[in-house]
Image 1 (cartoon, rainbow, N blue to C red):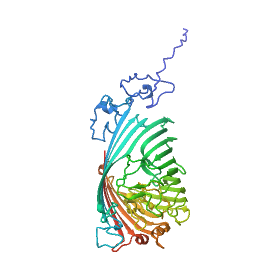
Image 2: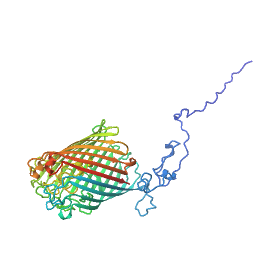
Image 3: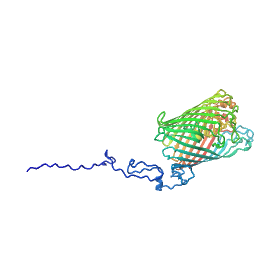
Image 4: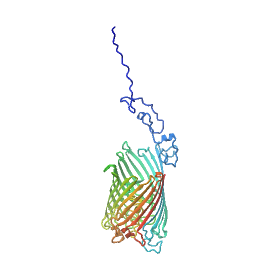
Length: 590
């Protein structure tokens, strides 16, 4: 029998397993998309389409609605650590403030409050009053040294911001900060606190200052990563360099600023019209006519320049002072403009500053450095009554090395001094308004305390409070820059020890000299004054309970062991050659 060959159709191939390997799918194969998700959260930003996310995730349109809808946090106005409308964590509910002229659901309110308490016993050379003294038996030029300062400052700030600012600058910002200060000072001699001998040797004073009052407008974003251009007008804080060597203050001004290249490049262009300051608190006195003193400044920062991990900054500034005809008496009756030095005539000047600043690290070594040159013209030198060229220089550097919980620091600073007060060149370096964070900062005796220049100029100080330079000004708040000064040389070493996250110990030792004593010799009519100021030794303990910045306790002590130059200027009968300063400080922040 013949058997026919029958062709059998092959069976259907097995289905393709697109998920045969966990986390991978077969190229060219797209599975079913998840169901569309409707956005019903009114007022939120529109969410991306669901196919932009894995199926097991859900987009959250903003940073506050989820935790609010889950009821995980019950808002308390006094709690800054959880979501709080008064700290800008949630937008303003316009239904509760219909009187507020805002539109949209992206306005935020931020409130701040700070209490700053200072108790400061200290000693420094205190001249005996010419007409009278608290000790009738004393015939010395200098009297008892001890004094006490008590100061309490309350700051309250408010800001109104537009824009979801988690990743970008606010579109609009209004900010105001007021400061109320009450202070008490007790000294052992008359005519130190008041010009009138009848007013005694203690003083209690208070003042309210406007420290911030500005409008900030976000002009545009210049990249997808929120590089931007903005401007700010009003009373605003500004720091010209990393450590506050040239200018660090809150002044009336107009400022343009922004970033480029993912924030690796930053720039500032600003003009400031300097406000008068209250004599005893140092706060802005907005009810007085601003000074005829202007500062124009521009700087640019670049990260990873000149080397990786180093930020470089170039600064150019012009200080235009026209106060030659301005006679200013401070609140205690002492003349501050013009300073009671030399010919006692008014001054005005044009000072141009050019500087380079660096901050970062080189390998394991942290570095901060600044260098400035100042050039221009003083229209009326108080030594000669003639115009004089300004030509002075400044440099400072701090190197530090971190080892576990310790940082070890080396510091050095140089400010040129005037070598001939009677020529037509002023070579003493002075800043516009310094507030240096350097060489121990306000823990240091020399930076914290003011040393009166008795016998060379009435109501004039060798240095100024919270200042490094020996500028021979009546005060840095109300006086003019002075380029006829002895300059400064400083060499220092220090260390910071973070013993726990809450507790830090710091110690610092500086050796100081006048760079050139020619101006001191001319003002004191002395043939020779040694350069050595002395050794400045200080230590500080800082305690932050719970490792927060809202409660900070600080206790520091400093001593100046005077050198030959200091003793020559301020020697008196019974002087031990050692002066001290103790600072107890409590800062509470909301």
